[in-house]
Amino acid sequence: MSKKKTEIIFLADEWETKKLGKKLAQELTVNSVLLLSGNLGAGKTTLIQGLGEALGIKEAIVSPTFTLINEYLEGKIPLYHIDLYRLNKGDIKDLHLENYWQGIEVDGGITAIEWSELLPYLPSNYIKINLEIDKNLGRKATIYY
Image (tube, rainbow, N blue to C red; front, side, top):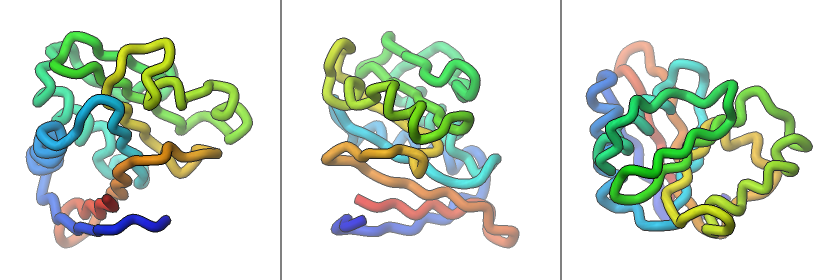
C-alpha cells in the first residue's frame, strides 16, 4: 500500500472511537471510501456509528454481517455500510462493490467497508483504518491516507 500519510490514534473507549468517526465525517466527501480492518470487537462498527451520527443519520447503525450491505440514505450524504466478514474473495468480486464508490446505480455517498482486507480489488482512492485492541491503552487506530 503506497499511502502518503500515516496517523496513529489511541482511543480509550467507545466514545472516543465514535468521536473519530465524527471527525472523519467532517473530512469525507461524496464517493469517499473507508476501508476498515481489525479483529472482532476492535471498533469498526462503532467508528461507523460515529460517522453516521455526524452525517445526521437517525436510524440505528448496526453491522450488516448477515445482510452484507446497509444503505442509510437520510443523512447529509448517503452512507453505504458493507461487511465482508462471511464472504470469500470470489463472492465479493461478484457483488460489484465498485458501483458504490463510483456512484453507479446508487447515489454518490460514503462507502465504509468492514473486513476490507478481503476485497479482491481496491478503489483508486481510499482511507484505510486498522483498528486494534491494546490491553493497556484501549483501541489503537492506524489511519493510512
